[in-house]
Length: 295
Image (cartoon, rainbow, N blue to C red; front, side, top):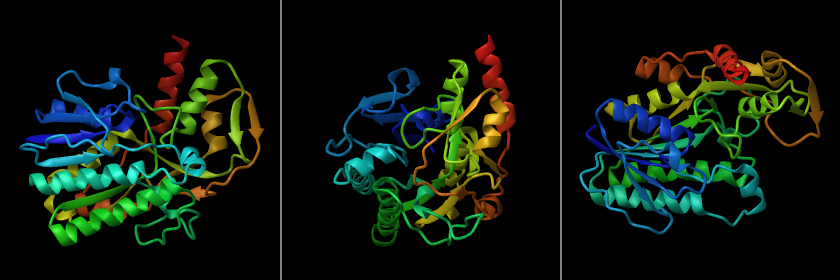
């Protein structure tokens, strides 16, 4: 990689990816409309272009790789506004710009939400898909567009299905909102930890450091493309109650909502094909978060 574009590069995952690429000596262009991203997340060594990818046509001159993370990451928003197709429109526009500009590799950030309620766990990439929200459906449609652009137009694409991502700059809003960030705020404010449903739902929490490393591995390994799909999760799960216990303090339980009971990744495919081992430092991360709050 010499020059890359990171859409959504001012967001949680995107900004961490940009920082790593800059450290590697890669020339980075960030495209972000700052609707959910934050300007103070923008690495000053990257070129930043504020734009709306649903309609704008920024130049992709000399770009060899595109990391597409731009999205409106809000499940509830998509349920309340099912005709909002911005996530699909921005993806198609970015795919077209990539195709026309001779981009070699395109990495699409998808979501484990495409699986819906799993029939079995851990969930492998061959598991049937059954989106439970327009947001999840748009991610699945995005994967299919990537496959088509690979098959028809020869644009090398790969789709990464993220499970529950946590880490530096994690947000307490949107689809990337983690129970960890919610508990962090409540713990900081000395409020009871609010647990939805009975708290026994299991989640696979993956470090943002692993997420950006798998993005980079997929961008540099030509065998990962041609519309390929990988789960990005550790294969280890914790219940929400267990996460609350790691923080400590009073718990309170709120009304039920529709969500998968268990979501755990089978990651054998990416481990074997890319020789990648996921870290599992969630407990250490929460310990550090608590220590920072005390300071």
